[in-house]
Structure formats: C-alpha cells, structure tokens
Length: 182
Image (cartoon, rainbow, N blue to C red; front, side, top):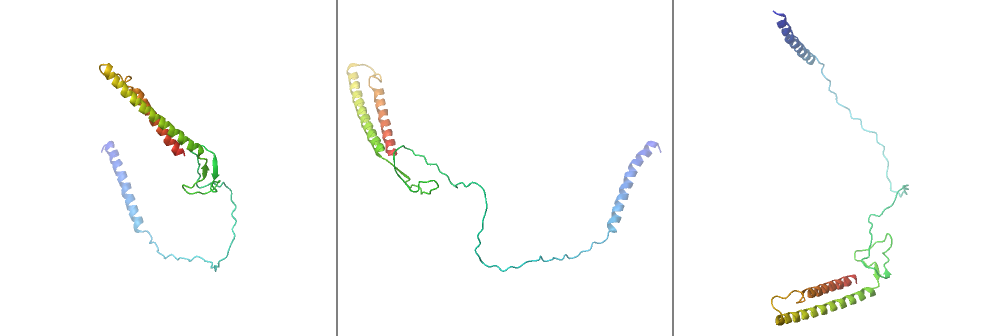
C-alpha cells in the first residue's frame, strides 16, 4: 500500500473509531446509572398569629409635601365690554357654577343704544337702495329714449345699485351683531 493511501485510510478510520467508542461509552453510562429515589415532599404549614378584631376610631396623621392643583381649571373671557352691575356669589376663585348660570350682569344701556343705531343704519341703507333702483329705472328709460344699442353699466347705475345693496347687507349684519351683543 502506498503511503498516500495509508494516510487516507487513517483519516477515515480514526474518526470512526472515536465515534464508535463515544457511542458505546454513552450506552454504558445510561444502562449503569443509579435509579433516582422519589420522595413525597412534606408541606409545613406556616405559623399564624390570631388576633380578635374590634372596631375603634383611630386618628391618622399623614405628613406630606406637594402642590395642590384643581382637577378642572377654566378661564372665562367676556365677549363684550361693559359696566358690571351685579356679580354672582359663585363667581369666586375655586367656586362652582352650573352651565348657563348667570355669573355677571352688565349694564345693557350701551348694547341697547347700539341696536337702535344699527336699525337706523339698516333703514338708511334701505332708502338708499330704493333711491338707486328708482334712479336706475329713470336712467334706463332716458337711454331708451335718447341712446342707441346696449347702455353701459354706469349709465344704468348698476355699480351704484350693487354698492347700495352691499351697504344694506353690511348694515343688517351690524344689526345682528348688536342684537347678539345685547
């Protein structure tokens, strides 16, 4: 046998021999192992102290540090300015009040006067719209009598009428706001 073949055979035989010896050793160890004893575990009951309970009042003192903060905090902001005539007893720091409860009563005079002024502005704007409509009719009639073709918007007072109607809408909005403020 050549040395190369012998070397190759040794490479295969040595690991196989080691594997066989290892498996045989494991089998011997498993078969010769001692049997484990099984014992029941004893449960030792815990020691208990028994007391008779009776009711009594006890005052406890708790020493603590910290900052007390409210669960709910609300900031009230007025929608209008005015002279305060009356303040509710609930309107204090830390006070409680119900939804819709009146907390302050303001002097209504300024708000009532604002409604009167706004109604006057609406009436003036309505008069201006009526005048512009009448003037637009007159201008259109005169154009038909004297002019030819389609009249220009300024001739028929279209922009002036549109401005008067916009002023009327603004006056009505001011009246609505004054009524809400009141």
